[in-house]
Image (cartoon, rainbow, N blue to C red; front, side, top):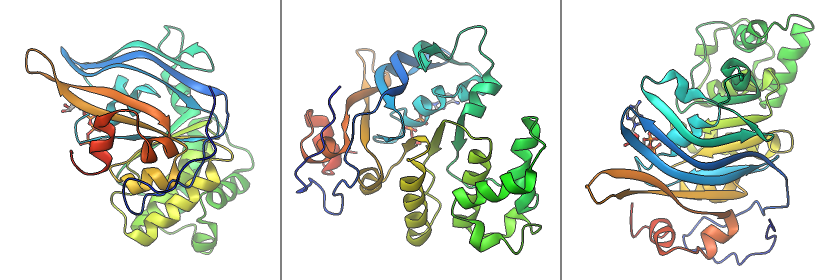
Length: 282
Ligand SMILES: Nc1ncnc2c1ncn2[C@@H]1O[C@H](COP(=O)(O)OP(=O)(O)OP(=O)(O)O)[C@@H](O)[C@H]1O
């Protein structure tokens, strides 16, 4: 697939000039006709898209369109939700993530997750990062690994003198960077972020966005965000979902458009995308 590197910055919404031109990169993950059910309810229908290596992909759309549901299907997090079922195919390096011989624990080590609300364990800063390593059987060079993860999450300088203090004593933004450090300590390939800034103030949000830019050199990132300016600022590719009623009046999430972020925010191919990002809908 060709990736555009040139787009018109007169965006459809103020403050949302895309800053991350998409470049050609191989897909790490593919969703092929993926539908997710909760019991009999089909929450998201027929999603087909690719997640490209070392790029940031944003999932946007109105509340309830299935962004978090799709995100959770990418590392089998939906397995932990009672009654949830994934149909279609999700592949990771071409391998079916839902094949019988695939260990979901290993999947979640290689495809990590950061949640909306920072959720450090009630343990020290050091232990928060070391914990994930230990449960993955890694015991050597612990100090070094913890330091590297905290540096990678742009938190080291702020916490290096108080590694034994509780992770819960940090500010919200620091807690979220601690959670990112915890995620990257086990060296995943992909990091899924479910509205990682929605509980943070603009300064803390800016730090996480800068960090995402830095991390994209090493990791593949998929982010769910309600904030369209944020999607435009941080992502290379954007998937716009919406929720539509079927003939029986049941609402299902659907992928409307998936493209380079520059294209989505300057020249979307579908009127529903344009209506959403210009605020006429949603
Ligand atoms: N655990 C669950 N059990 C049953 N239905 C669920 C569950 N989680 C989500 N749903 C339903 O699936 C649909 C999609 O929800 P999801 O949370 O993925 O949407 P979203 O786009 O991420 O929404 P928001 O932006 O409000 O977080 C909604 O109708 C929601 O009510």
